[in-house]
Image (tube, rainbow, N blue to C red):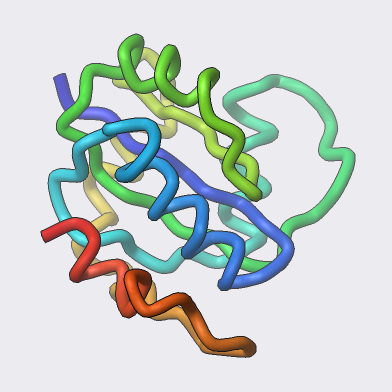
Amino acid sequence: MESFAVIRADSAIKVHTALLDLKRYGHIEFSDVPKLISSDYADDILIEVLCTQLRNKCHSAAVVSLKTVPSVAIGKLSKIHPPAHVIIISPQYNIFEELKHNIASFPSFEVHKSRPLEESEHTIQEAIA
């Protein structure tokens, strides 16, 4: 079953680290490379999925298509502590079809390096390959 992970954070570095954490520590499989989405869109997704008001706006966000079954991804996510807010979007949510339809049009997520990454963290593309 296809699903998506929406990652919201204060910075692109935190989004990048959260994506790496999902792969390395959560053993969550990605179907494709992560895509950049606007922080406002990510905030709107959170409001729609959780049916609640927003406490904090994010400043950087990404979405990635998952191979991992949504319930398994949620279980694995609860065991790691990424430095970002991660929302698993399954087909049960109305926003799922919109994401599925639009994900190809989003640009690939690239980290704007405000600080050097560790040698093993060169790019997300290397981490998901």
